[in-house]
Structure formats: structure tokens, C-alpha cells
View 1 (cartoon, helix red, strand yellow):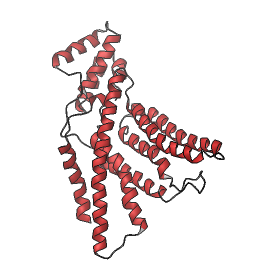
View 2 (cartoon, rainbow, N blue to C red; view 1 turned 90 degrees about the horizontal axis):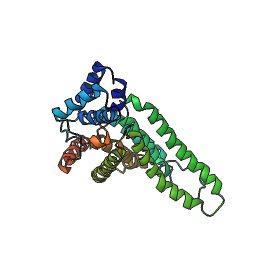
View 3 (cartoon, rainbow, N blue to C red; view 1 turned 90 degrees about the vertical axis):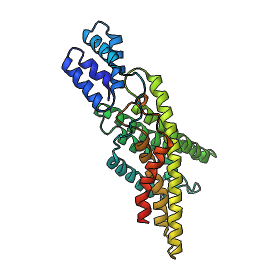
View 4 (tube, rainbow, N blue to C red; view 1 turned 180 degrees about the vertical axis):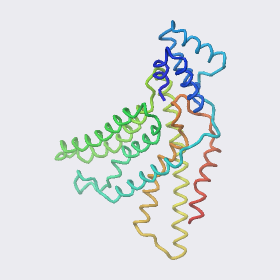
Length: 296
């Protein structure tokens, strides 16, 4: 939520500022509201309403720093599971298809090149679902991801006849994930100052996502291996269709679910919790795997 815009729009309206603050308080974003108000007050120190709110929040002890861990944070599981399932199904479908614009000599499925932009799109939809103020930015970033993938195709056509064609595709597969990660960062950045703090916080949260994603991948790999072994003991050989669904489709589930667990979409990067221990993640991971284990 862009509190700076709300505050500036209500610079002469006490009721509007009060409503903005109550909305921030209800979502646990008092610190973000306080920082935005300080920014507005610094740009308009003669505004009496800003001054009154500045001193009110200062005396109330609203800290200008990352929010503490929120143990009862509500995760939008329904939205996360639906988006993760769609991402997994697209992964599974692309795993059967070759890249349409490359020669047959490069025997690599399309998912190798397209997984990152597709995943970034679903992650962004999850993060910005409730933030109407960033719908335009979301559309712009999604358009940029599509343009990056199309640009890769155009670039390959330029050098297709040369011996660098396969090397180009390999570099494209390496750089598209970096572009996708940067696109997510651009989309979640607030439209106010303190960009360095938010960028650093986003980088830290990205590391959290990578670590937790690794734990989820290990747990998921063990689950798939045990599932295959159990069916093997019963004399049942899983078809390639099911194997792809378990492996590639399961891999498509992880990114959105991990982001849902680690990142609070209602808070800016600098206000995210950085105090959650691995015990919390492991406990949540066990709860996620229990229904699947009972099903198998």
C-alpha cells in the first residue's frame, strides 16, 4: 500500500489521515505509515496536520524499523495454492514441449527457458493481488517479462545461422531468471523514498526464499522418492505422465508456496519479519506434507 500518496492526498483532511492510519494499524503497517508521514512532513514542514501526526506517532512509540515477527500472520492459502497449481500445470505442460524457435539439435524442453518469467508472473499476481494502487505497475512488469522472452526469440533468429546459436540459448536460460527476479523486485518496491533500505530488505528476503525453497525442494524430493518406492513395492510402475506430474509439476508448486510462507504481501520489504527461525518453517513444512503423506 502506498501510504505516502494517501497522506499527501489527505494533507488538509484530518478524517482522511485518520482513516489511513487505522487501515495501516489494522494490517500491522504502522511503521510504514510513520515513515511515509515523516517523508511527507520533511517535504512540507509548515503543514500543521503533518506536524501533529509526526509528534503523535513519535510519542506513541511507533518504531521506524522492520516490524517484528507476526506469529499469527494470516497467509492467503487459497490464493497461493490456486496460483501454485496453475504454475505447476504450466510447468508440466511445457516439460513435454520443445522450444518452438530452436532447431532439433538443441534437445531441451521449453520449460528450461520459460520457467522463470512464468513463475515471476504468478508470484507477482500473488503479492499484488490486493494492492490496487500497483495494478498499473503489475501490468507493466508482466508486459516486460513477455517482452524479454520475445526478445530472446528475436535475438536467436539473428544469430541462428552462426555457431553461437546454442551458446546464446544457454546464456538466455541463465539470464532470464535474473531478469525475472529483478522484475519482482521492481514491482514490490514502494513509490517513495528509502529505496536503499527497501532494496536491501528485498535482497535479504530473496535469500530467505532461496533457503526455504531449498528445504521445501528437499522435502518434496523425499516425498516423491518414497511415493515411487511404495508403488514399486506393490508392483506398480508409474507412467511418464505421472512421473512428470510429480517431479516437474511439483517443482512448479514450490516457488509460489515458498513466497507465500516467507513474504507478507501486505507489508513493504523493509517492514518484513526477519526473525522467523527455521523451526517455524520446518513445522509449517510438516503440516503441508502431512495430508500428502496420508494420501499416499
